[in-house]
Length: 158
Image 1 (cartoon, one colour):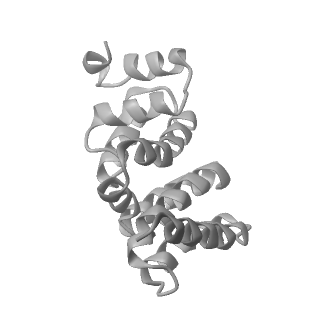
Image 2 (tube, one colour; image 1 turned 120 degrees about the vertical axis):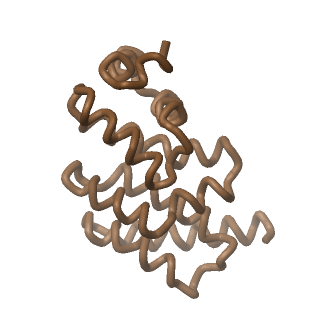
Image 3 (cartoon, rainbow, N blue to C red; image 1 turned 30 degrees about the vertical axis):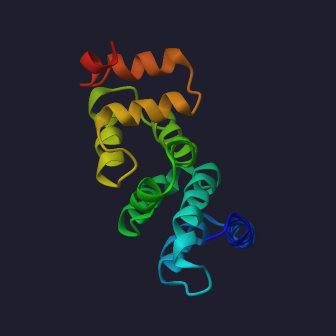
């Protein structure tokens, strides 16, 4: 697949995303992309990367659990991790990790659920990588320290 072809596929998919106005419409795009024959199979992981990043920016806090469920059931993050280079992959996934941590109470159990969910849905291969994505997202160091201090991963953070 040529870089020009991939760029065109991603631009076309960006227009599809732009046409979605509600949380539900954004979330439904994951399943639609899985079965779509309008986008080249080789371009789909890149479209998933763009969709994860855009959905992380646009969906409401209340829709984040549904977003995580569809990222899991569509294998979107797994496709992104398997196909994109490390820099592009991290850029696509870090915004969702940041959103999840930003809406999570700074208590051990809820924070561990975020770490576990990120591994379960394929965003990260292990808990430490989840924290790395949070760092990549530009989360303030004070927030990262608090997340480390209040989670079971404290020994890995320091």
